Image 1 (cartoon, rainbow, N blue to C red):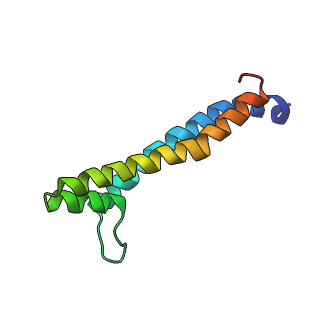
Image 2: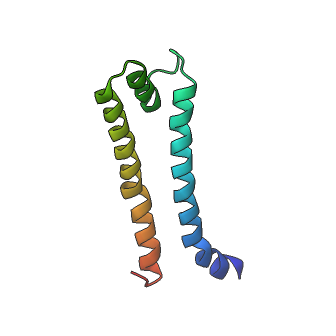
Image 3: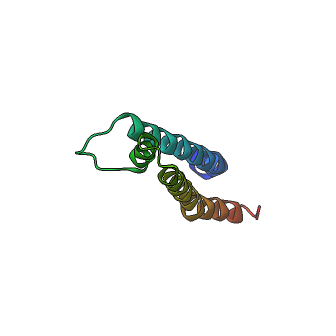
Length: 94
């Protein structure tokens, strides 16, 4: 029934939703780090970006942007791509 037909058929859609949800949450985290800064929180990537902007340090801004990009690509390659490949391979679509 449901567990043998509907859930396996819906799995690729769930994975696509998780991937998109992670991308939205990553952007929201960066925005939150720029808005909410506190010495108790430490310095995150968003705060590093904001510090570079405030001090007019383009090298720091580009470094922060590069780190944000690298983390985003790494999560995609290390988490979501293997999951998608496994699901597609199990269905004979790869």
